[in-house]
Length: 319
Image 1 (cartoon, rainbow, N blue to C red):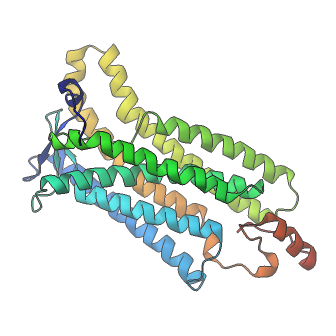
Image 2 (image 1 turned 60 degrees about the horizontal axis):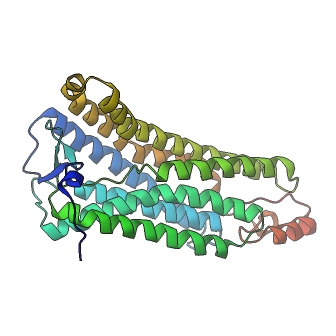
Image 3 (image 1 turned 180 degrees about the vertical axis):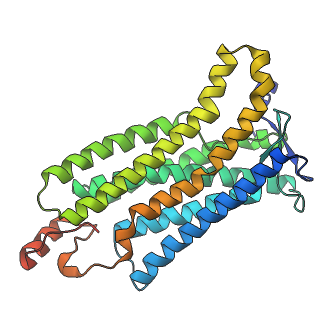
């Protein structure tokens, strides 16, 4: 049973109209920017997954490589749904177009694609936090089972609650975009930064890790921090600056230029997908090569790595 939604709550969301064509350059620029950025993003993630699988002869056993593959698959799904939904801001600040001129969504399709896009998009952000926690749990010799017993239900619970809250709003012909949530980004930022400093300390003080391992782990950390930085910039552009303008800038001045600002911010945000994929590809080049057992630390047991290191007198690697 859908929950009841007040007119006040509905007025906070834009109208979602079917797309019967692009009427000006502003709409074409959003469509072309999304098509190019998301196509490049999906292409990069396919290359990442393919290279890892081929390099390991389709027998991936490393926890890190499995996480990278999972991250790429989630990103591919998210940006695929973004391409299908294809939301376009019109020059009417409260009106959006969704779908394509050749594909007009039914109400069921509208509900499915909006909720699926939002769920998959927020999952691309959740995986950043999980990736960092996974690394920290390995180094600290904590149970990964415990991590995922806590993380997976939370990752499922919030999208389910979002879907329940969004359903009546979508049925009313409005659009809801949860890509940047007020609560999610600060939580992800806090966990990521804490994990970064804890991991940095571990790699600086633990002599059992090879220099190669430290370099690759540092690249991973910087990649995740830069992705987080991009998310914070998008949060600033899409949510915080408009909120400040509404409350502190003269209303007529803001409304005069608001739609152009929103379109520019949307086009900028669309390129997060490609930038994120490029950062992941840059940070994991060391994962494309399969390591010999004599010099590799398995991701599931740091204790085993010390035994391998003593037998073969080689410094261990978390890769």
